[in-house]
Amino acid sequence: MKEEELKNSAVDLTELAIGVIILGIVVTVGALLLVTMRDTHLTDLSVLTKVNETAVGSNSTGANLASSWGKEVLAVTNSSDPAGLLNSANYTTTVTGEGTLNLKLVDTSLFIGQDVNVTYTYYNTTSRADWTLANESSVGLSEFGNWFKIIVIVGVAAVVLALIFMAFGNRGSSSGIGGEY
Image 1: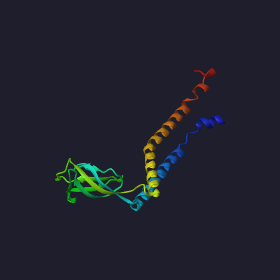
Image 2 (image 1 turned 135 degrees about the vertical axis):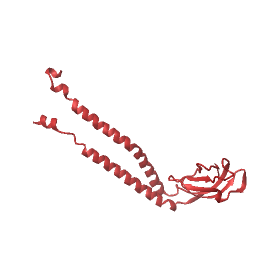
Image 3 (image 1 turned 30 degrees about the vertical axis):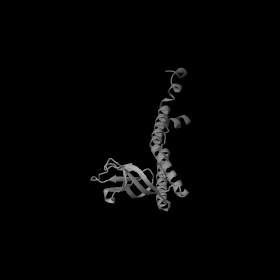
Image 4 (image 1 turned 45 degrees about the vertical axis):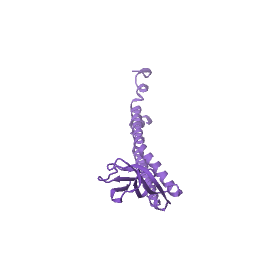
């Protein structure tokens, strides 16, 4: 009776599928909460000023400034003539999703391809532990997200291999004399 039950039983993968879905939902919600908490505390951080950082003027991709979590550009000058202040109408600034401050010159600027000195403010991300913890945790969870697809693929491959071994693994023990064909 036990042999018949074992031979006729199907492999139930429902629990595995539900577990993968729950894991994905928990990681996604956790990452969203951490990023939201991090971003709401960003303006609570102290502000530092970087003076005369050299960047190459560009009108296509712009120039990313070195300090992360930039706030605003205060002044842009010609590096060969520090007294030559660029009018703010000659450039635009944007902050990327990762907090990088990008300086882009307008198409008519005379400083395209030349070095410019940029003075700007940025948030001191090491000044508060609550921001640093949320930031590092969200970065860690985003790394897990990169591996999530691989984990799912390996899990599916393991299930397929298990099914193959279950289907073909007992052939030798139940057929013929002495277990051979």
